[in-house]
Length: 206
Image (cartoon, rainbow, N blue to C red; front, side, top):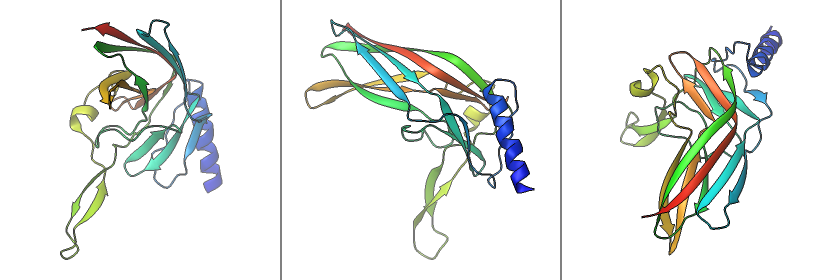
């Protein structure tokens, strides 16, 4: 019976990959399911000759749906650390790139080849809090609690496909780019995967 259930689950997720099926995999008793070909996301970075623009393409061929407490964790090999506890547990990819001294950086990101997975319950990112229930020993206890400001809205999260932070390592200006190939709408139960992201960083003199 268990083998039959796993076969149904895999077939359902394969159907989701084609954009027509319904993915119902929210039990912590189920094994991880791969959709497409999950592998380390490939960054292709192309700086301009004058150093004022950096273009990049990210290829994402698949994801893993990993059962955890409260639903599923969506993962991509090579992803960065999880986002803020309480937000949907979807992956983000980050990369450190050279900045330009005396210039302000801006980022634009566009998503292509979207695929929707229906009827998916994505768990909130795990957090930790102090647990003092065992005598006087203070330990960190993991927990997952949904942020109502995110899970209560009928919109995809993250709301943007990329963010940018500026900083410095010694005297070298750097920018940290974070991109989100997977978005989640908790009200509709839809996970959206962009199999290709294209972005550009522009440096403008302050």
